[in-house]
Image 1 (tube, rainbow, N blue to C red):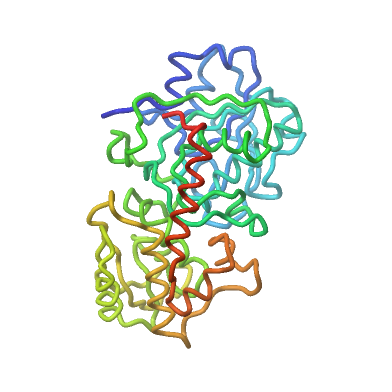
Image 2: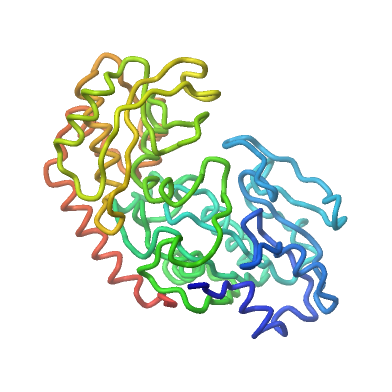
Length: 381
């Protein structure tokens, strides 16, 4: 099945929405139609549209910036348009950036997880447009891991660029639905229009959309990585390797001090649904343990419909932390250390160290049910 993306709905059904307006476009290499034609080209080459500026999130509009690296603004060599980086000196558009713009069009592929920074950039764009009276138009795209929710709701005191709003780790919404949530629940009351998809349903994973996977960031290698990411991203906040610098980031976890076979066996003995662990070793080409041999496991999804990434990722951490208490550690110190910012709560560190989650996962399920009751009014599909 091939769905119709928001950019295609705009051009086929609602082109008058952009005519006569000066347009800014927030996008990257994922801003494409179903034939892989760039949204930049589609808007720039349409003679009745007036594209005046481009805006880039983390990794830049071409996706060649490494994670966490600041990106400068520049002039695009192909179109001659200014490219304003929203992952450099500022992460929120300034008044000067918006001066020659009536509407900002957003066409970004989200990955479906709270700590993916594109949705924080969306939030800051909406905030800037609220303050300046500019319009935001979101071209909707699929949530590649479907409409399922997992995890805990972020505590407001742990709001950051890697998790701005009180939503669960795996939010189960499209980027257009998130924009509606931001406007009506979190006070980002800018002029807002969502251009919906056609044919997408909430049970779909990426492979069921008929679309080609284009990496939204350098380590977002495919659907398996995306499904694992809500839980395996926690590894970033520890001294373990999450597989950056390998061909399977967020699918593997390891360190030089781990016994691969023991970890695989103890994880598999948990009998978690939809997943099996395989002993593995790897040598990262950059990031943690660059050039060192790491031992650990690769998680293989056997049934994504039943697989619980959040529970699986924390279970991996609990097993490693309790087995290697003198070697395992969290990165940073204090309440706002990187692990807590990812977790959105300070409760998890002690649970991981003791490998005792007690009723925590049940509490998370109740939080997700309450969140779903609040957000269904914003569902477009």
